[in-house]
Image (cartoon, rainbow, N blue to C red; front, side):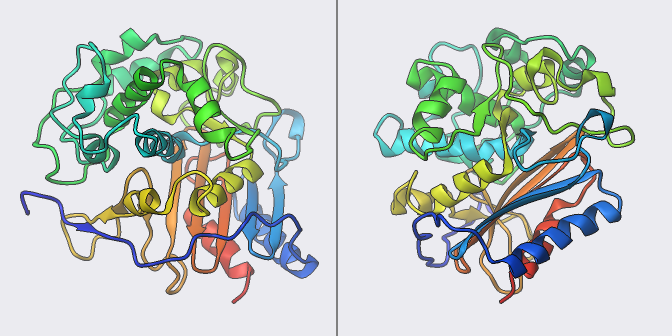
Amino acid sequence: MSPVAAQRTPPPFALLPALPTGSLDAKTAAALQEVLDDLVANGAPDAIASVITADGQWSGAAGVDGPKGRAADPADTFALISGSKTVLATLILRLAQDGRMDLDAPLATYLGDLPVDANGATVRQALGMRSGIGVTPSELVAEAGADCGRVWTREELLPSIPAPHASPGVSVEYSNPTYKLLALAAEHVTGTSLEVAYHDEVFAPAGIKGMAQQGPARATRKPWALPIAGHEGKLGLADFGKGGMLPCASIETFSIQNAVVGDAPSVARFGWSLFSGGLLDRDTLTAMTTVTAGDSPDDPDYYGLGIGRVPDFFYSSLAYGMGGSEDGYSSFVAILPERPAVVVLFSNDHTTDNMVGTRDLVRALGE
């Protein structure tokens, strides 16, 4: 392994055009809806999607995502889980773009007097999962899921940051604790909560009203997309929504880096704003989409700054993705700047392969 992870700059691509205001044509809408219906027919409890292309927008749903057989709806609020990291990276990059953070300064510069070891990693290395900090201790993951109504304080989160185990910048290692440190840094720099920082710095500038960071200050907006029996994973059905959060208060206040929720149309609009220059300028977006490959030249996992590049996602189309899964939730967002298109797919089952479903939605758009 090279002592420094090899980075690959993105191929040139045009920014997405202005957000279209019209709707996709009826034939395309029917083809997209058929994909959702097929996902449910093949075992998914529900499928919720939103698609934006240069020709217009479309949202649809199929299946059940609530008590008493409530039909899924595109307006339902969904937990993005690890997809939240792209939102956090966008916040950090906007702060850097505005001169309030330096991507090549040590992350510790922005953590105040918190008693944690950031391993000398820079902000850029942390965003790119190259901090040398590993995964959350398993016993704390179990504790976070044991009492779903618990609200973790910021101080209680610090033991979940493990000691570094490698030099920064050497290799890519997916690390929730690293993004937890980035979330704490964002709060330190902005002088406010992550909930307020996201609203003021990301969602409001993009005109997005249907996304939010969950926290104890207010309950998550309803209606909620919820799993049904047989699709809930390790949590009990009664645990979902405890403390007014999805999946529940303990998991979301423990994993502040993974606590964004949104409805599918709003998430699609976020993806479009991100790649159209509405949130990041061209240079900053290039930094975000500069990826680091894994140990093998053939490794399909290319991680940028809070977003992944997905080689051969749909034929030869350049694609970037954000997604995540947790008990009762699975999501994937594909951004294809060359087509151009943004495709969002949600399902309330963590085993649903939303990347495959997203490919099917892209195929339904036609050539």
